[in-house]
Length: 106
Picture (tube, rainbow, N blue to C red):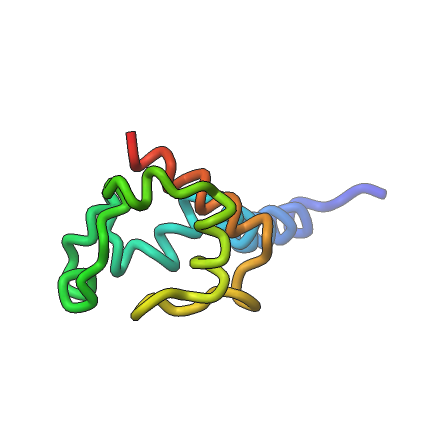
């Protein structure tokens, strides 16, 4: 099967348009889409929403010293004013976000 130039262009355009959906599975992309509004790009919580909700910095020792097993239920079920992400993010996505959060703590 040979594709003509137009068919190839359409396939490439569709692939380009849907590729961000696949990229959003990275922890950084999910963090930017779901967490950054409150936690900020650096995880310090110095955003208008973070200040209103009195968000604890992701660099706070209580968060840094928490195990991934302790953070997973917080992301899934929410905590205080943080919304629950169960049903919105899969387990692999939650693990990816936590892995990304750990990079912000360095």
